Image 1 (cartoon, rainbow, N blue to C red):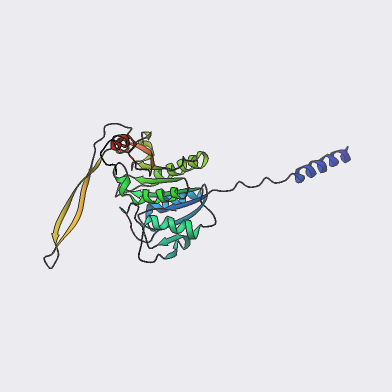
Image 2: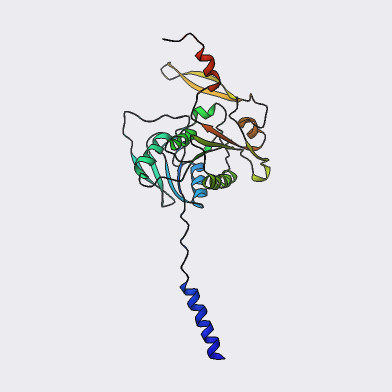
Length: 280
C-alpha cells in the first residue's frame, strides 16, 4: 500500500515536471511623446500608465513646444540626451519639436524595433475643433501614424490645477483597446478628458471635430526702449450644440474620442471645382 502510494506520487511529480513552461506573452512596445516637454507632469503620468501594459520608450522635447503643430527643425542639428528622473533613466530628450522627437525615435532610437503603439500627452489644455491643427501633441501622433504606428493623442481640459489620475487611467484602458483592435490606415485618435474626478465623468462620447474656434486678439505693449511688442491671447468660443462634437462633449462632462485623418481634401467640393474654368 505504501509502495503503491509512493509510486503514484512519483508519477504525478514526473508528469508535472515534464510539462513545458508556456512562453511568456510578448509585451507590446509603446512610444510616449508630448509637446509640454520632458519634465511635464502629464508625460510622467502617461508613461507610468503605459508601463503597466508594455515596454515604454519616452522621447520628448527638451523644452515646452505647445502650438507647434507639425513643425519640424531644419537648418540646425538635433541632439538626443538621456534623461533621468527619480535617480532612474526616464527617456530621451530632444532639442526640437514633437515631430522631431517622433522622427528621431523612429529613425534612430527605435530603428530596429518598430513600436506597436504611440501615445502623445497627456497635454495641458484641450485639443478640440480648430486646435487639432495647432497642437504639437496631435502633430506627434500624426507623425507616428506616417510610420504606420497606431497612435493616440491625449489631452486634459485644463491649464492649471491639473489632476491626471483619471486621464492616465482612461489612457491605459483605451491603449489596451487599440493594441487589441488596431486602427485603420491614416487614422489616429485624439482624446480629450475633462479635468474632473472619475465619479463626475458622465461617460464617453465618440465625436467629430467641432466648429468651435478661438476668438483672438493681439495685445500691444512697449518695451523699455518704447518699441512695441505683442502677446497673442484669446478665448475658445463654442459654436457647437451637440454631444457629438468634441468641444461641446467635454464641456458637458464627457470624455471625447475623435478619429481623425491627415487627408485634408474636401471631397464634396471636388466635382464643383472641376466645373470651373481652370483648364489649360
